[in-house]
Amino acid sequence: MNVTSNPTPPARRDAVGADPSARAGVPPPVFDEHRLRRRLIGAALLAAVMVSLLVAVPPLRSVATAIEHMSPGWLALALLLELASGLSFVVIFRRFFDRVPASAARELAWTEMGTGALLPGGGVGAYAAGGWLLHRAGMSSRQIVERSSGLFFLTSAINVAAMAGAGVLLTFGVGHAPNDLPHAVVPIIGAVLATAVVLVLPGLCAGRRIRKQWLRDLLAGISTAERVLARPNWRLLGAIGYLGFDIAVLWVTFAATGHQLPVAALTLAYLIGYLANLIPIPGGVGVLEGGLAGMLIIYGAPATQAAAAVLVYHAIAFWIPSLGGLFAYSRLRCRLRDASAAEARTMPEPTSPQTAALTLSEPCTLRRRLSAGSRAASRRTAVSR
Image (tube, rainbow, N blue to C red; front, side):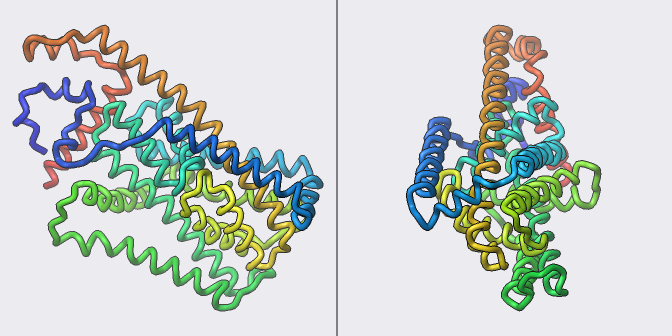
């Protein structure tokens, strides 16, 4: 990557966050804090409306009754499992963002989970928020897109593998659940097709000139995920736990109603039902309940118990990451604000390149490590090319 055309010293560019990839046409991540607050308020209002409907509409009172009779022990277990899911995401997040200091990485991971629960589109909004914070901390946009897309593709690969595995179990009659073509085989076909598209896409684009830098970095994320899988370590368990513990939360809330659904059927209902979260509703309130409850009923769950289990599950899966994310974001924002204030006090405007080198010799820890990692990665990319 050529950075010699700009006379500004590299240390100065990293300190102020003006990364080289911005000049290569990669737009910095954009994140609107006021919109996040509006989403949280909107999701809370929608949740209040749903609770009112449960109490006021006679056909839905049976659902409210089923929720009232849930065992507190099961609900406490569900809370712990959701917390375990969040901690698992922190583990796999640090596998991709290993140059970020540990405390800041944990806060970034929780912030992404919180925005993923609040914003429409789930994971896409979460990665945008995390990218905005990483960009403020000094990481290059190219590295943000590549590593975030690698994390996305890896966690998606775990979802696809779980769908295929659950479909195979149903096909061979494991568990008392529908195992015909639409219920068992179609999910397997969908998982195989999704895997084939992701694996073939980099090869199809390899010989073509892709003008959009962000698209090249997105495709590089597939290679990043492949390299992580090729060199596994214990942090890969975080990707499995992130999905597995969350599915376990739904299983526990369903068991709390006095009924149990086979794990394979529950897994397929969970993965397919979550596609409803693509509908742009704050927090997925209403649409996710409909998608999950509908798929649980299709896979043999009683309607009343399915609705009760999904409502409690979504409340737990929404508020645990949201509250954790808001707390982590407040700490991370204070960290970045204090770092910027420290830089402003310790770095007067240099009058020469030599003065700039002296005044920028001790930038804040977070920005120094992120910027150094971005420069090292850029050099490796330039050498590989």
